[in-house]
Length: 149
Image (cartoon, rainbow, N blue to C red; front, side, top):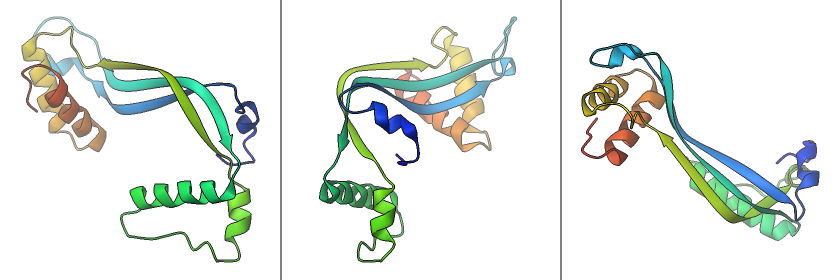
C-alpha cells in the first residue's frame, strides 16, 4: 500500500477485512428460456477477516516484492534494487500481511434458476466479447453441477 494512503496507520495489530472479487457479469433476462424475469448481476467474492500486521523489515519487503513481481510479470522483469531510485520507492510502500481468521465466500451464479436457464446463461456469457463474462461462464461450468460453457 502507498505510504501516502493513510489507511495503513490503522493496520498494526488491528482487525482487517480483505475482499477478493472473482468473475462477475451483468445477466440479461433475455438469457432465460421463458417467463417474466429481470436483469441481475452474478458474481463470486471472498471476504477474508483477520489481524493485520505491518512488515517492517526492508529485506522482507524486498523479498515480498520480488515474489509478487515474479508471479505477476510475464516478461521476466526483475526489480533493479541497486538503482538509485529504488530506495525512495521502497520507502513509499507499506507492506503488510493479514493473519486470516475467517473466510466467507459467496457465489451467485443463478443457482435459483432452472438448469435450462443456467445453461443458456453460461452459453451467452461464453459467447460474449467481454473477458469477464467469459471468465464467469468458465466458473459456472466448473462449479455448477452438470454445466458446461
